[in-house]
Image (cartoon, rainbow, N blue to C red):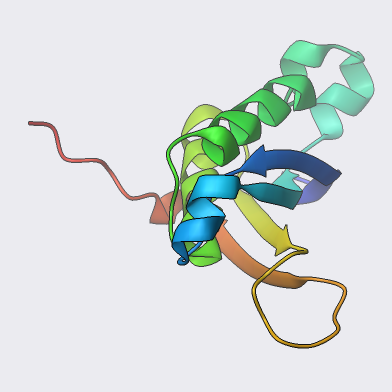
Length: 130
């Protein structure tokens, strides 16, 4: 393997209802996700075939599904949800997820609050079957 190479997805915006405060879960707000997928892109670079890479349109839809599904309290939990789902569905070795919350209920002037996590494929949590 020559990589890891990286596919970057930047500024994925979603309107969702996450947050600790009841108002955040009732009114909602914009969340922005930045994502890095680490994988070997050498085969795709040679073949010019989408089957040899990760289709970033499909990744976007997966992130959208995670971001817009049921509310969570913490950005940390949302980032973990996204990382786990991307690692389960796509042929990447590692993922970096950054979730931004521009309207966090923090007294003061700031651009945004963000959480960043990195997860590797070998660290995927397996959901328990019932």
